[in-house]
Length: 138
Image (cartoon, rainbow, N blue to C red; front, side):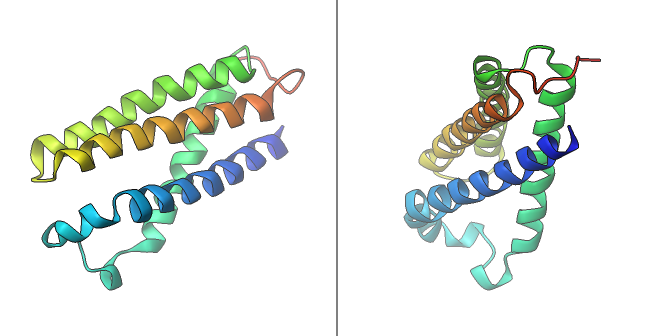
């Protein structure tokens, strides 16, 4: 079972890192440039810390699914990912919008970006842990 957890965590880390690149450079890049006064200059950004955050997020996301869901399949994984993603995305996007002077499109994209990433992550967990690859929920 440890192999499945490690595979899932590594897989989510890779998937989410790729999606983060697309969301934050391709989709939001121009918005970030237009609001450059709000962000650290690229050379001062702490990319190692961002990757650490992504890895910890993937590990906790995986452990919650693996330990607390008795039925592990694609449907359960997708529902889990959507619920987790909507909650996390709403908090990140609109919670930040409430206290930071960011444009609405950044908040909106953060919300839907996190929701999409978690839905894809849940789908991946459902595929990795499905059918016979389960352990009882505690």
